[in-house]
Image (cartoon, rainbow, N blue to C red; front, side, top):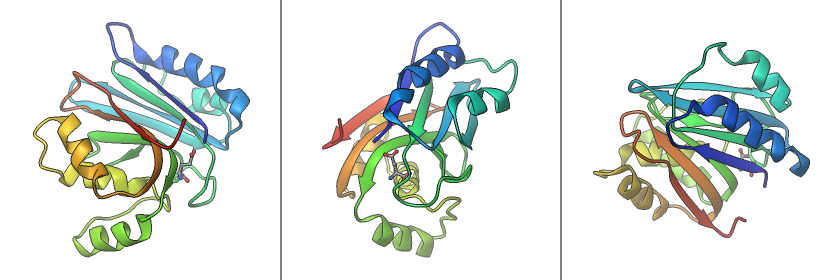
Length: 176
Ligand code: GLU
């Protein structure tokens, strides 16, 4: 159970998210990542390793807000760039970060795969973003609530949608 940080407001999110992730480093983690919305699309950077490794791979002039940042302690899938959070939906517009464990992830993954979803990680977390993308909404908050009704397990999550950048949606169940 590692770190989640989000920023919404008038400032550029990147340096605020990095500072937040650095403050959470004491919790231990194996990878780090962030997603930042700007102009209707998301920039996602993530890697296995330390927050300073993430800083090295970040695009130099990354701008925008809102944004979310994550440090991962792997439970489902090895520590790797692909398994690092955030995870995005097929459009690349919606990003999710998650601490905890989705207990029915295998069944949800099988169902979503049968429906044509292509998974890009081995994590339990990735099912969440595809469920949110498929939920009718209409608001991001509603879509997240509808997705979470299908999930059992523990979670702290934060979600951004570049198409609906007015909010970061957060939820928790059993995770600190
Ligand atoms: N279960 C998720 C994963 O393995 C989240 C782990 C965590 O709490 O950092 O990616």
